[in-house]
Structure formats: structure tokens, C-alpha cells
Image (tube, rainbow, N blue to C red; front, top):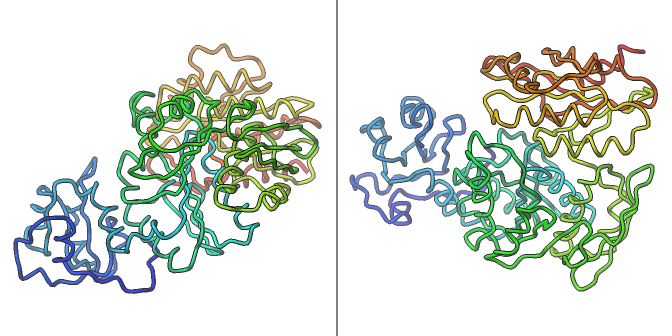
Length: 497
């Protein structure tokens, strides 16, 4: 976890007063801590460690490691305190997970209040929308930050990340570093898991955006009603000042109709929305677009991205850039320079006579939309490779399998991070109820599946590998093996020549 350079040292007494609790041992009142963490791997000497209950074990159970790493005190619940048992000074609260973000924000001086943070949520489009918004800001010569699935950017510095939205303590530390480095605008993906698990507590968003909601993560949320209820929490005064909502999506329309905070509506074609496309004409490179927005403002430009869903992403990024006071002329001029996020309809060009792309589509809706988009621009056959992840929402597997078969000319079913499950069993669930055509294939080994797709391609065809996008690993039986669809696709193409 990256830390700000300035010292933010606080005492346990100050923390106890902030939390409204008593310190049982007054000898601990003046103990000073220099950071707040909830991951043992992030501890540096002098930290306060927040020990959280987990699904398999309690964070406080690692008290030996916590102390050895240099933590000077622990904040936890009653169960966690039993593990600590005098090994380290301990403060006890009822729900430490809910308090992590609050404590870290307090410790760093509420940094998200002092920078302009934009949060984007939705099933699909978060990564690309934040990437486009960040690029528009940079084109406008602003110092920016980016937090999301493919990594973290603080100005020119790029950091890896394990989550779409970092853990609460890490997130507040990031905000503090960004504030210290005079970052003006931050674009951030906000996952439903992050909302449900209180990772964004005490984060303040000047603007939040809702892209869409389609089936995903039901292993966690159980049903769409719970999934939507979690997403809409972001659009309340607890977190945000202003919302931007895609009302073409049925859940977005419902969110907008029952709005709790000021909201701005967006639509690809509905002129009653505050932002919409007056025109969007497809050409060989992408689209020529004209957008209408707040107060009748008109913004036009040439967009070098393919896919109708990217029109939705551009519309939201444009509306938010305008709201953050970027000159409309600058916004329109930036369009021709915008690139998609890594692994999102990313082209692999090695001189081959067919199109080759990698995309992150890993939900039924995203698979359907991506294949429909590529169908429009493909003269020959559409050859698609897709798998479903293990230990995740099983109910979407047959739906994704159906979308793959119906949306492509050659459907190749394969593995995608089977994790602890059998890849063959996942494939059985994907193909259940389908009558596979003679052009369909089931190939468990993902490398072989990609090679088969490339070997099948003829001039004018399109090969797309779906599901993993920017990811660089394949998890099998608890072991993460190096695997990048972009490299594998390139390797398969090179082997043809």
C-alpha cells in the first residue's frame, strides 16, 4: 500500500475519542500509531492494525505475524480481542469492518473531501468509462488519478491492484497520496462488493455514475434485487453530491425516477434525457458523433472506438468531464485520441488478414453485446472463444453459453479461471441444453482453444477471445499460472506465419 510522505501520527486516545469508546488500559492512551491497515502484508512498523472477521478465519488470529511486522496496536471486535489477549494494546468495537474506512479517513484528514473524486458503478462499462474520463482530463492538462480493475494511476505512476475497488484503509491512503501530489481529478470504479463490504465508507464523491445492471455476482448478492439495492446505496447523500444515470437501462430508469440526490439523465437516443446523441454515424475507424447536453451544449468529434456500448461509455465520460468544467471544445477535440481500457475490444495486429481482438466480456449481457458489435463490422465469420470462471455465479453459465453459440459462427467453449472447480464440469454447465452445431467446439485447455480459433480463421473473419481481457493469470486448483489472452492470441497468430 502506498503511503503519503507527510506524518499523520495519532494516539490511541485520539482514536478512542473519535470512535466514542473508552480505553480499558489507560497506560495505552498515549501510544502513537503512524498508519492504519487491515492487511497483514501491508503492515509497517508503527501501524494500527484493524483485525476483521473473515469467512474462513479472523484477522486477529494472525497476532504473531501482526506483532512481528511491527504493529503497535489492534482495533477489533470482541472475538478478535480473544486472539490478541494482551499481546498488543487493543481497542474493541462492535463492527470493525464498518469502521475501517472511517478511521483511515479520519487519520488522513478526510482526503476525498479535498480532491474531486468521481465514482462509476454498474455491471459493465466501469473500466472503460473511467479510462475515457481520465483521458479527457489529461487531454485538458489536468493532474489526475485512476483507480480500477486494470490498476491504479497517480499522475504518471502506475501501481498494481488486487481489487476493482481497494480495501478501505488502502483507498483512504491512496486519496491522501493523491491529495499530497496535487491531483485534481480522480476517476474510480466502485464495485458492488466494495459497497456491500464497506470499502468506500467515508469516501466522498463529487459525482457518481450508473452504467447498467445485468446478471452477475449472484453468488454474492443472491438475486438481482439485492444486487441493485447495493448499487443504489452509492447514489445517496451518504456518499455523493450528484449522480449521472443511463436511463436506457431499466434499472437506471428506476434509479433516476426514485432519486435521493440531484441526478442527470443520459440516453443514447432519447432527446428527453439531459445528455444524448444527436447523431452517431459508424465509419471505418469508429464513429462520427454529436452529443447534446446540459443547457443545449453541443459537442462533436471523431471517436476511434468500435462498439455501440462505447457510445454509452463516451456519453457518460463526456457529461462528467463537462460537469467538471472541462471546455466543451477541448472535450470534442479529445475524442479522436481516446483509447479503450486494456483488454476491452483490444486489437491484436500482426499483419494477419483477419481481425483479432481480446475483450473482458464475462457476463451474459456483455457477451451478447460484444458479439453483436463485432457482427456489424465483420465481413466473414465471427469466431469466438469463451469460458466461465469457477467459484462464481453458476446460474449465468448456461446463459453465457447460449449467448456464445447464438452470437458467433464458430463457438469455442473453453476454461476461464476454473479455480477450485473442474473445468470440464463448468463446460458441461455452459453447454447444458444446447444443441452444438458442427462448427462449435469444446476445448478445455484455453491455450489450445485460442490456437484452434486462429487456425480456423480465413481472410475477412474475426477472432475474439472473451472473458479475461487484461488479466495476466489463469487460476487452476488454487494456483495462479501466467496467462494473458493478448499474448496467447499473438503467439497463435505468429505461429501461422
